[in-house]
Image (tube, rainbow, N blue to C red):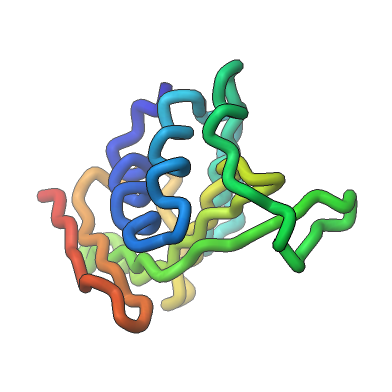
Length: 139
């Protein structure tokens, strides 16, 4: 089970209007955080899956992108995080591998180090073209 409010908020916004939005939301209860890798200006959050998630796998037969191991991949992007105090203006992507949520990537575009401790105050915003422009603010 995912305990991070930030991760849950990212999933809430980033899957909006995605073709398989419902299936991806149904995968969330079957995910647990596996590992965090800080890159300095960014962060990768990897997940492990629990039994039963396969029932909500999104179709991959039409996927054109594969990783070096031949697994189908899809990247969902379009959410931006802001926190002026921590000097964060970050793009957030979710990687789908073989139809299942695999990891989140956060990249601080202004070049400042991304904090080791997860921010609890932030603004998330949908920034893709024709989005609902939803914002989520945690103070």
